[in-house]
Length: 564
Image (cartoon, rainbow, N blue to C red):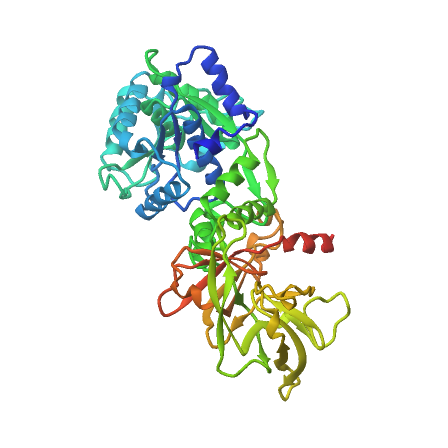
């Protein structure tokens, strides 16, 4: 992975900032980064970019990176999310130096809040959230001071102590920093530092009845961990002034002072990454859970068959910038296609079967033919696949009548069966409704692939995949597509739910070659001519279940061009 990170390319602007700091005398040994997720949901592709940025910088500069859980809101946080976040970061291939929690610092944060009160820089406010909001003013009109703003430090200390001890109901009091109600930055107008939450915390239990706000906890946690560069997404740019003000209150010149810098989100088309909306999809059962393979969560992508290498490549390709933009999901699909092409074995499976009977092939006979596993891997390896009189091919691979541009099987036409023989369609059998149920063909016994005969080297324009009916294994196959039908579902005038793709999941019974009987959960293969598929977690010894990871080509590009 270090080779990936150090691949020759121009520095991004974050790396330029670090290089400038090093050139100005900041010691390389003091570099330290962090990835600070909130444990209130599963990580998604947006987090993956942040993970790759922070841990990538750690690898590039040989600096430690902390995994810090911003667990300051017990009403929304669960141990399940903590465990999922750990698992996802490790699966992406990264290793943290220290596992930290904002809750590790609750006492220090409380002590510093007490110090602010003693200095007259914080006060307890009894107003409602609506009253506080109405007094904030507007970006062009100064706010008005709270009637509690000039309460004495002694009275504030007593109230804050009682808040901590759980003597008040939720929402009764808040602790606010005393900064500047006329500041052009609305966030500096006496922001809330603590609120009362009589809720049990997943790590501290019922010890605390007050919990710090993000802006107070985040920067001070960075300082306690001696983070050198605190990297946030662009929406936190207005918070930087407050981040620095809070640090000013506790900073010791002998220690490293964290520097907050911001980068733009990379939004992905046909996707949402709002945790609130993703949770809605889960709780209202539009998807089967956080790890549903249609979800943009890392766990969903893993279950669908995406690889960590592909996601890291995607993050590196889109890069880091100062402006938000929309990335076409096709780029992510290209990255996974490119990675899986190098790694996966080619196998044969039929998703929509129609029966082929080779009338001149001896009844009861079978052959085991050599099939190449992956032409991209050297040395080449092979497996055996069974061939017999009765086969399945894809229904779309046959037409009774077709023009000269149709290179698959048609009456009177020839195709090669992959790794096997050339066959010629002679007749069809139909049911009472006129649907074709069987295709009767003849084969050329001398045309077996790789036999070296003249017939085996005869050129025919079509090559089809197939499976032997007697040997094929049925497998539940989940054909996944994009979850939304429009590029920006959460920027529509109506609900994003109205743009869920009704065809985002189709379940069919496929028939796969018998070599896949021993496939394990997580194994990925290429179904030849169909796409890349992964063995799902629902799979077991009695029932194989495959998820479609991605097709061999970008079919959406054609659809969108046609719509335009």
